[in-house]
Image (cartoon, rainbow, N blue to C red):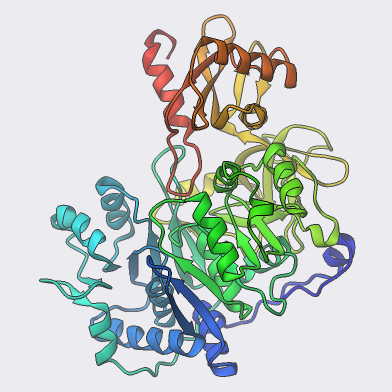
Length: 546
């Protein structure tokens, strides 16, 4: 745990990493607490009818021990990849912990993935085992013939032909298992990038990835681990955000986690859940926070007990930051990272590190800079690429089976992110946009985030994406895709009004010269807008400009 301090400089100056010679995620999130406080609440699962299932640390650990024994009995070995195609349910956490106990590599997969996305990840990872549910089995049945290496399939919904029952395996196995003594660098977890650009890559992490996350997550939750803390996230546990920004850090601190297998994010239900369960801490991605704004006066309508909210995954923006602080009386703690190296920049209102429009300062233990194309750190207020110095405990081991891709991720000892940003004189980093998302218009370099943030301030706009559309005169023009709020009607008058609104709010070179009203935006399973799809659509419509 971080030692609480009253100011950022003190916290950063006295911080030191303590990485032990042996470390296993399963021991940190399960074994220790099952031994120390066995009846302590670990997971409170909310079923579809609103009823609860409470799992103590002892219950979780015994179930994980049984599954670990079953994996061994079924031939799964250290280093094997175990794919987990499951929603946000206790069995997901149990399967992860069991995989770590035997030294296998957990490969989380989102339940929303289509057939080709699943096929690619299962083939690329070489998974020899899969734990899933009925919905996952239905998808698997259509691609199973192309997965000869997948030997063991387990369903949490009971046995089927050629499929083992999760509960049946547990019932037949011992609840005692000695967790493998692994090194911090031994492979533990492989998460595929969301694929906003290019084919997804398997990001392989060692067990130390959890240790590396702890300072950033503790800070973004205003020193998580206080008496009475209870954490929830709507983020899928198949995503690094759900696992490493919420589930595992909380359990390692003995903080119980609320789980709920929602099919989609419902803002009204989210507030009801927060109120009913007395949730104190939440990790809510920016897209979900923006959707919460559709609920009228939630701060006065709901009696909320929360004391901290962290957000990451894409830029939050000033508009959402300011709305939240005004509505609930405290700011969102925005933080930043990537699947490859997460939670390295962040905010913590508890120690005065919070600034509208910024993604925070360097988290204690991490060295972050804005660098040029040669890897040289740039002076304050200069646009460049966000980069993290190695070695760093939270940094990935490699891209699975892609050594060249791994090498290309570094400039000397800087891991480059592909994200453009600016660091101000106070050390706050301001996110500008992905390298591929930046818009070049009449010699201006324009980040889409500021335009989208301004669009969200318009009273008719619910969601928005800004891209560069090919243009023979300006290279690109700014085009906005806009999702309107319920009850709003698209039309020329509204389009003109939105265009003027952005021009007056930003500048004459940043306003969208074209606006297209759409019912939805293409998004990854983690809630990030896939601007590449929108750009590809525009390029296809103007082939002479390719």
